[in-house]
Structure formats: C-alpha cells, structure tokens
Length: 165
Image 1 (cartoon, rainbow, N blue to C red):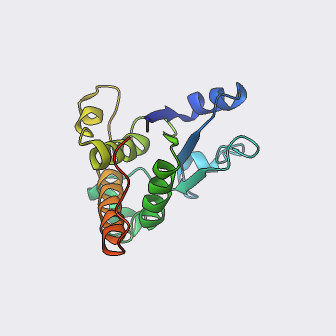
Image 2 (cartoon, rainbow, N blue to C red):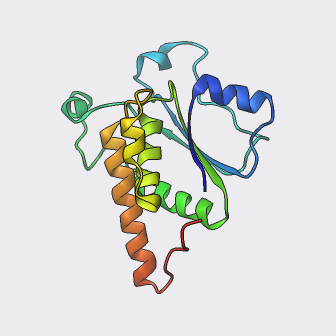
C-alpha cells in the first residue's frame, strides 16, 4: 500500500489525465464558513466517474488553540475519523494505494498520511520531517487514534488485520 499526499491542483491534474487506478482517495475540503467557501466557484473536487473509493471530508484546518473559535472541542472535531479508519482498513485489505488530498497538500492531507504510515508501517515521522509538509496534528491524532481503535475492534472480533503489504 502506497500512501501519497496531493494538493487540490495536483489531484485535478490526475483526474484530467485519468491517472487514478487501484487507489482509494481521502479528500479534505473546506467546510461552509471557511473563506474559500464564499467564493462562488468553490466546491469539493468532483470524483464522479473517476473513482468509486472516495471519502470526502469537510473539515477546518485548525490547530488546538483555534478549536474554541469555531465552537469545537477536541472530541467534536473530525467526527468522521472512525468511519475513515474503516475506509482505510478496507482499502488496505483490497490492495489499494491511498491518496490523501487537501487544498494545498500540506496540512490536513499530510496529517492523515502521517497517521496511516505510522499506524501500518511505523514511519509517519517521515512526513513530519519533510519540509514540504506541515501536518495538522489534530488530524494526525484523530486518524491515528481511530486506526488504533479499529485495529482493536478487529482483534476483539477475532479478525486480526492483514499483515503489512
């Protein structure tokens, strides 16, 4: 399983070239209330007819100190994390690569990719060490914790996760 990080612009280029094969996509986009959402033409990327393995998540790119400015707590931020963990495990089980994409390909997508890499391969630190990225730590911890929780559920149910590919 290869895990990649893309910006919106890079993702749109892949889509236009029909270069998405054997891939699950996690696409973070700005929710209503974010300044980009006020632009008339802003919308989540349209993946229709390109991939049937897409999870799109509207989430603010926030750090811990800014949560209260949006009326959020750590617990309330990113409620889709558990569903995302199941999506990631299913993609891995099906032998798919994963693309994590956000607006600039630096923060939310990097945090998600780092969590996936840390959970499965213990090398998520490589994303934090790469000067191109500024991984969102809230996204990282929410995804990592959800993956760990899902792994525990699989073990409890007698269905251990598959070995690393």
